[in-house]
Length: 201
Length: 88
Image (cartoon, rainbow over all chains, first blue to last red; front, side, top):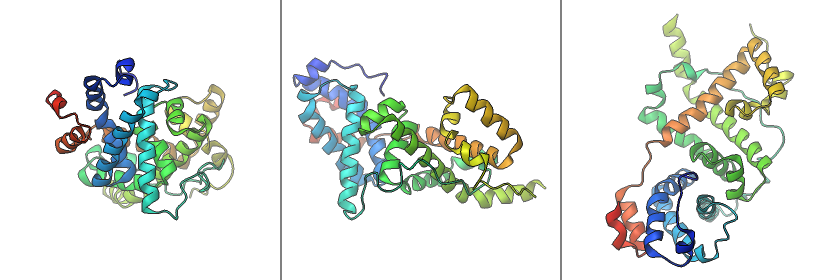
């Protein structure tokens, strides 16, 4: 949404209700999608959505325009999601100590070439559920980077701004996230790939 | 039988470049190096193809997500914006 946002920031900061309603109208579908995929639960995503916009409403007068409005909103939303995840599992650290930022990504293991499967099958109801399940296997830090970059289409710089990390950290986490998802999907589709090979012979 | 393994050698070195390669932002020299390697390494080719496909599937999947009307209504209500619901 970064390129299409065109709001009167002065009006928003001054508390203009109509302009705020327009901001919510235009941005909430994407913010909800992000939260749903971050949290994997509709009720939690809705609560976080409401809390994120309440926080945005309160913080707007102090919005310093160092980043774009959309990046700022994404940042608030990701922080809400991370807070929910932290409450669920307070014993699990969300920071950078889980190996996410190590130089070397784990080597690929699964080599099932699922590209050969029909798109209708990959994108079937079950295929889509598998995509969502795979995202939930990522650590919250990797999930946030992947969703902002590959689902919400933010640039590396915007993703770094939204998460308060360096661009290098975004790149490292993105590679790890993509490789992990590739492993998950390859493992999931491996039997179908093998069956298709047999059918083809 | 392909004895090739991804635990050592050139494949391991190139792993760090795969994201940039899939995004089309890899530098010219590294890109040429990677493509030369891919021509002779079936396993790496599968990894690159499935990595690219993975990113593509998530792009496609994100297109049909939307905000359920009831969630939208409750959000507007929570923010005291009911008067603006008609815009939807």
